[in-house]
Length: 231
View 1 (tube, helix red, strand yellow):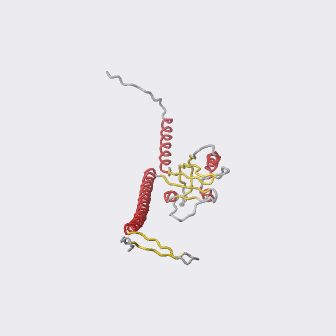
View 2 (view 1 turned 45 degrees about the vertical axis):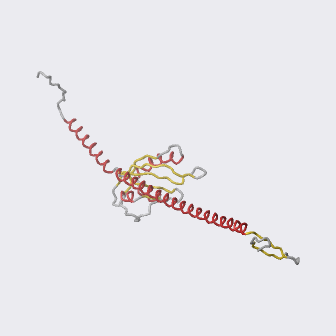
């Protein structure tokens, strides 16, 4: 307590290089104000840290929710695409022109009688399975697509089934990747088995041809006549 009767808190510190001591005295009110300011700073720092932690937690939770939502949307889109492919009898294919490897789904393999993973498909095998009569047409249709003159490929060709018979296929595709020089890197598309439809079309043509033959063999002329309403 000082001589004026006011209690004070003293802090002594020696000045380096000097035989002196420096003391600083604060009154009780001033000392409490310093402590209060210090406590406020600690409180502000603690509050700020808590807010930052809550913010990071909220962002992390939002990111997880967004990722889960995107995964759900992707799964839903994949399901819808699968249903669309199933309903249309479509299969998917992708051709890497750099390696020559072809990626096809199970539907494409089933069209040719192959089980999943049974046979590695590539350009050489495709050329081997392609019907000889369809090779010129395939080259003619494919050339402008590779050059970028035509945006999409559309053609029908035949591939040899694992059992030996020919499968009629409708193929659609397009170039999805090129290098800086414009060379094709990858093509993707769909394929549908038209063998049954081809058989039906052939049956109709044969029936029409047979009917025409029978008509040609009729010796008498065929007349068209109209029956009046009064008889």
